[in-house]
Length: 616
Ligand SMILES: O=C(O)c1cc(C(=O)O)c2c(n1)C(=O)C(=O)c1cc(C(=O)O)[nH]c1-2
Image (cartoon, rainbow, N blue to C red; front, side):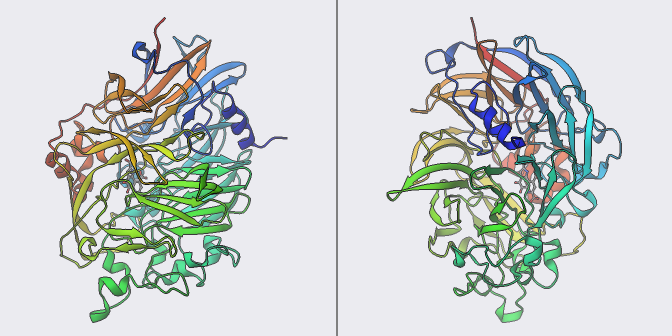
């Protein structure tokens, strides 16, 4: 019997489908379709649109399955305007692909937790759903993981997974690996403790749990973990406890809130973690008095491969065994984070030749501005190149894996304002890159070009479920007039092949196709097709609202279609919408001021799936 993820892998071999959030569990966002190509993309026309019933941000993407009860179907899930309408799933029959028919919709109506909405740090988004074994599997902001019968929309099982009262809200998509549903959540700004859980896809029963902080046992670290890379710092015991001030690992953050990937040959999942709880860095170092300096809080013990205040395992890429969650390797990008550079961005799995050797690699564009290439079998660090302006670190030492921090751009002391690039939202936030596996060193990536001033504040409480930031942060464009660049980037050489500057940050993901095209959307609603070789914009259409979703493509009835969510929101989107009040609770992070500083106009809200094809 093939596993649920083997079914997904098989569907991904069929160019007509888009069976998982990243199209495949490798997260390539590559489509082999080429009916739409550089020659005819100018004739792309909007064919249909469907409301998503929300005025909040729509990240994520639809999925398309060619044979659900004999019918081609599209499924998608919305972000939340209110709990009553939170995470509406719609199922569209694509049998008449120019005129799809909704055949069911689903919204959970019982046991909803309204307190999730104000605890979603960065908008009430949902990054997508999955399909396998006749089931649509998705999650809700207030922490349920739910499996529906794909034909009827009937609930098959529901589990309570994340708990808003503990600061946990669920935004990132679950992933199906073997017969498990792997689920994380967000909450580092609300004193949560990061955790990854695996559920049986047939029953919803919990199979394993691994935390991001705590004892080695809690983290699923074993003596075998990191054997190939002892300098990555698993030599010490219980570093997930000891690298925090006493007891603070319990509210230590490290939430895995975005994308997960899976290698079925290695049977390993890749999931990375967010920032350590609260942004005021000095308070996450237990040293006092004259010892309490930036240098001492960043010290590194070469023998342990770890610093005493690294705040492990925040900001970490974990390679885990799928069956048990056991850590094969753990690599921390930003030890003792001083900027909120969450390490959760997608880990894309491609194979490439490096220094004459064929490698199974993992590519990760981090918030901290470095694009990392790791050997995904054992975590060996192979490259770390800057893909945006980075001043907080000179470079990453490939041997120890540690960034060489620049003190002048590392916020530390309470009340002292320090500038750094990139800003807290990162050189790239959660919006995913795309890669064609046949050209595996070249990545198509949304990037952001902001810097920030950060003034750490005193801690006033340690209460889970309440805002846990303690910093005054002001973000500003690195250069006036340009705050986003979509670029093609070589992860081996660190060279940019081309880039498209934008007045707005790039908050939507990319897609690359065998038709020679890259698709992505801008924050003010321009949906674009770009020549992947030259970076020339070949086609663009204005959609109803800003685009923070990720394009997909599929083929039904002999024709190729392209779909994307439109609906402004997400962290950057909130302040530039008409609904400024939505952002007030996070005024501390200066988002509204940030939008004003950039001179951004208000962009109207409203959520739709838009679908295009080349006109006959
Ligand atoms: O640390 C966390 O737990 C957490 C969660 C989330 C989230 O769940 O959306 C975001 C962030 N942090 C964050 O730092 C961030 O920049 C961010 C942007 C977005 C978004 O969807 O636009 N979410 C989040």
